[in-house]
Amino acid sequence: MDARRGPQRGGPPRDGLRIRTHSHRSFRRPRRGAGGCARTLRPHSGAGCDRALVPERVLKAWSRAGRRRMKPLPFVAAAAVIFFLVRRRRKLELPLIVGGFLVAAGLCVYGTGLVKLPNLEELLTTIGTTLGAWTYLLVGLLAFLETGAFIGLIAPGETAMIVGGVVAGQGVISLVTLIGIAWFAATMGDLVSYELGRRLGRDFLVKHGPRFGMTAERLESVEQFFDKHGGKAIFIGRFVGIVRAVAPFLAGSGGMPLRRFLPYDVLGAGLWSTTFIMLGYIFWQSFGTVLKVAKEGALGLGIVISVVVAVIWTVRHLSDEDNRHALERKMLASLDRPGLRFLQPIVRWAQGPLRFFIARITPGRLGLDLTTLLAFAAVGSFAYFGYWIAINERGYGALDLQVNSIILDLYNPTAVSIAKALTTFGAPVLMFWLTGLATLVLLARRHFVEGFVLGGGMLMTFAAVQIGKLVVDRPRPTGALIDVGGSSYPSGHTAYAVAWVIFAVIAVRLVPSLKGKWWIVGVSFAIPVIVGLTRLYLDVHWFSDVLGGGGAAMMCFSVAAIAALVVAVVRDTDSKALDG
Image 1 (cartoon, rainbow, N blue to C red):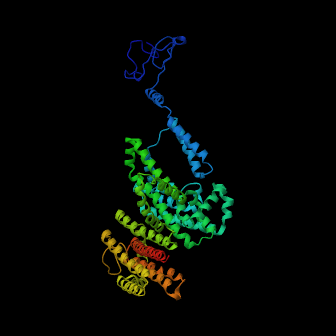
Image 2: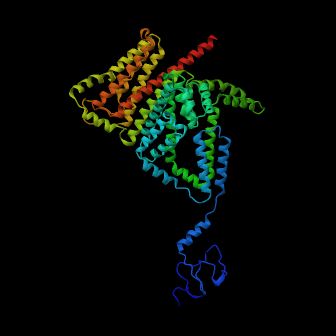
Image 3: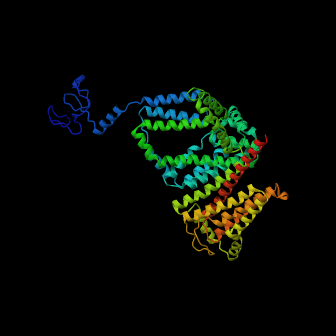
């Protein structure tokens, strides 16, 4: 038999071209075309016919291609996205429009069946491994450029924050350090934008804004938002993309004082960066749960997403005062029914305390003082608790080892003697006696608010220092140049030295000859800074101990001042109500 000819009918089948009995399709005997050649890929015999030798891997590929069908739902979703973008094109920001069309294109490609969705877990792991410590630089740079160079008009900064949080969730980088870098970078970017606005003016944004999607109509809407909320627009606008990108510039061009701009900005930048970084962090930490829910039923995942979207929409809707009043009227009208009228006295009774509470906790309602104190409390609590968490996780804080190595290279006997003298300005015994005497004098002269802030703040600071030393129980650096005992974190000397700043603030407020001379307060900040440096130079504390101690004092004195401020406002309000 010719080797080129196929086997005769009834002979053994060739390897790789078997027809399995469990195949889903039944094979009919093929018809023969011209020349008697069977129109099939199976081997055959017959005069004038060539065999079609098809490898099994090709057959499997054709089988997979046959099973690949188009998916209608992605096309429906893409059409809905495009319809929404077209309808809302005049009100949406340019990044949202571009991103929306990219999403629609991706849905169409996925619907054709030509591509498969990547493994999300593997993709995120690869991103985290690739970025590594460079995530600090990436997140910080984008947080700075979003407002400092108006990059936020093109690429929303939330994406970088969430990606950074995911990388931190994988354990590649420190979560606390990442939040600190993003917070600092976002604040610095806002300050640069503020200064540009002060120097260039509004005309610069009118001239060049349309290139980045900032049309005259959008600029006017942002300015209306600014006029309506005033200083709070800096804080609230952090969570509104188009406002966030230009609000610092408009604040500078509009002549807003820096002392008013900065507290709102520090609060907004800190809350914004922390929120979105934590979203990415929590997402990765609960990634297995998310996948489990998605696998066990898309309904549950859809409900969760719907609830989150509903909450976000509700918060944004109720952030408008007119919407809140409209909702209040509807609720009161709904209670005017026979079955619900018994609730009216309860609702009326609760309205007063609820409005009072909301008015008191809203930044700006108690003036710039409250907003400034909240900013100090936020920064201080982050430093205190942030380094606490970092030390428990890794045993050291950011830059601890580097700073300690530099200090060892700077040893000088004369400098050591000077440091020993200067460090006494934060000694516990000295500061407790001074604070106690000053508190008694203030109370005796009926300056109750100032006395409470000074005495209460020092007591809370002492408690925070002792709790930190007891719980963290961190050993001190080896080779201390003076005799010390106890744990290292946080630095008590640095914390207690912050009281000098409180002394300066009280003096400027109460002493007639010093009123208005706030430069004294600025100079007083040098005392805790110098005391902290001496603790580092004498090698009795780590760098994070000093920052944690300063943060503890800043947090405690700010909380005491907030409490005193609220009590004073409530007392004045009640007295005015009685007089009226």
